Length: 118
Image (cartoon, rainbow, N blue to C red; front, top):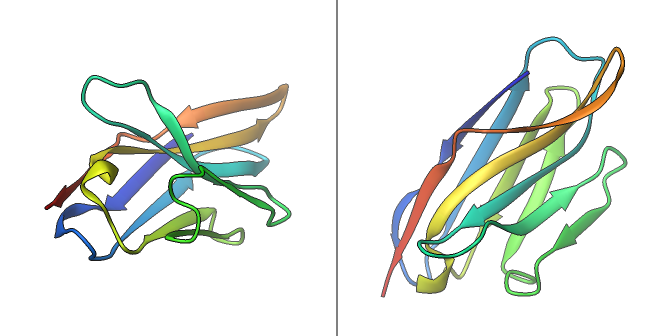
């Protein structure tokens, strides 16, 4: 299973960016998909996740500013980030739980850098 992320880049504080991630490979289905981030010197943290049923969960720090969505038919997940702040600067990682023949397993994308300038 491969996760290919796109988007990210440099934006001024208050601006917007979008991230996308597509899952490909051999799997039966994709359960939860989401985004995590890791800022320099910090641990990786959850940003937002969406279940196969469409339920979402957000980190408190991004609630009201970020929106996660998914296209289950295309096995893609998107993150729309509005009102970005310098503290949102981090490498953002896509994550997906793939259902395989013998169970489910989590996979990570390669990470994409988001830089918010003040």
